[in-house]
Image 1 (cartoon, rainbow, N blue to C red):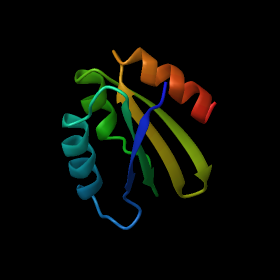
Image 2: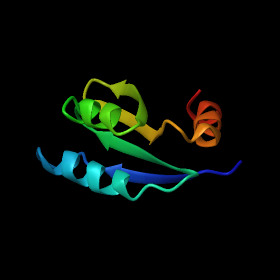
Image 3: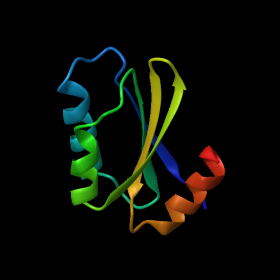
Image 4: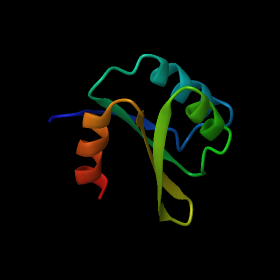
Length: 88
């Protein structure tokens, strides 16, 4: 299955802008899509929002101040399986 990444590079944004961008993007997420958010911090305030609304996430730290946060709809098992191949 081919999936589509929506990349949100929020490294230059100040809180709460990354949260607001992520939540507005995720409200429009379609089956077969996932969000890859690139951030200088973990989005701690976003995690409860994701859980309450049926999203899963996988946060990967790539450096001292660099995180990749992959987010998909929990019910979208095809996208989850494709992501497992992409991010390992």
